[in-house]
Amino acid sequence: MMRTKIICTLSLCVFGMVVSAQNDKKHELGLSVLTYATNSSLAYDAMSWDRFQFVNGVSYKLHHERSAFRSFVGIESNGFEYDDTQSNGIYAAATSNGIIMMAGWQYALGDKRLVLSPLIDVKYQLRNIEGESTGGIVPGRRVFSYNENLIGLAPGFNLAYVITGSFSVQLETNISFLQNYRTGEQVQYGADLSTPIKENLQEIQYRPISILSLNFRF
Image (cartoon, rainbow, N blue to C red):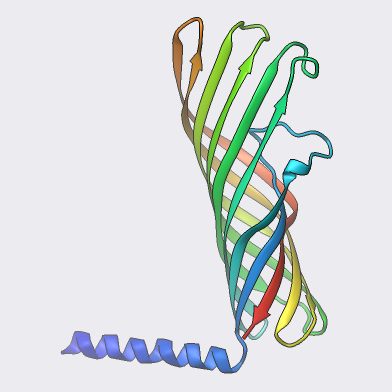
C-alpha cells in the first residue's frame, strides 16, 4: 500500500511539472542541420568538406528561469582517401561511423532576441573506424578495424537568435576532453600477421560548429 501511494505521489508530481512546463513554454526541441566533425583517427585536407555533416541529430531542453537542462543525440559519418602521389608512395583510406550523446546544463546571460549561454555537457561517443593502407616502410597491405568508446566533458557556448517566442536558430561551439577506450585488430597481409589493438587514449575535439539547429519551444 505504501509503495502504491509513493508511486502515485511521484506520478502526480511529474505530471504537474510537465503541465507547468508546457504552460510556460519550458520544453524545447531542436533539429541539428549542421555540425563540423573532428576525428583524431582520420586525416583531413585543410578545407575538407567531409568535416561538414548535415541533418545529424536532435536536441531537447527543459528550461527553468535562466537555466536549462539539455540533451542531444546525433550521428556522425566521415572518411578520407589519398593515393600514393599525395603521400610519398602510401595509399590509405578510412571511414568512421558513430553516434554522439550529450547531456548537461546551460545558463542564459540574456533574455532578448540574441541570447548567449555558457554550457557544459557530459559527452559519450561510440565510433567504429575501418580502413586500409599500403606502401611505406613496411611493404604489403594493412587492414584495420577499431571500436572506440569516448567519454568526457564538453564545455562550450550556445548562441540563440530568437525569431518568435517559439522559434529560434541556435549555434553551439564546444571543446571536448575525452578518454578514448579503443579495441580492434590490424591485419598485415603477406606476412599473415594479425595484431590485436587495445589502447587507452586521450582525445581533444574542438568544434567551432558543434550544433547549428532550428528550435521550437512549447
